[in-house]
Length: 229
Image (cartoon, rainbow, N blue to C red; front, side):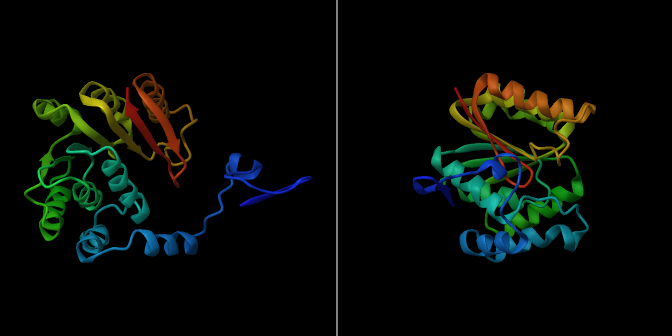
């Protein structure tokens, strides 16, 4: 984008409209970018389609967001990763593919049916030996994983009412330079509401800032990214 000024055209990353919340992407633009930068192979497509096929909530990350997760893990050389919220295993495939051969992903899912679908999708992707699907509530399962830490990354995409709990756990068990990733950080446009859920999400933001160098990436529903100090 370029901005017309009295001295000519200057390239800019944002303007007053985009800084105030206007976006310049449309459905067709997002689809084109997904096809260009985040194309699906058979395993990813099968996992992406699984919610519609199996009657699960259609709430997995978008293709470009899934690709972003993997790119971020590669940038920090992640080897041991925890995901809170598996659903059908689509994001788990992106995360696991970013790990080295001896890397490990623990992904936590509270719904047994979702976990079964995820295990099938991970097996189709050839990742069942590298990914452990842990059944149970995030707050209950996380303490059992602590012996495997410190971890290189924690990706949170689960019940929004517990994001502050998950963020505190990540702050304690990520290595220095490790990544905290929190999806839906705009809380579906409800972040500034006075509901208990919104208060939890704001607390997640504020507490993350205390322990991480943080930024909130304006994906369609926000992705909090933090690097452990």
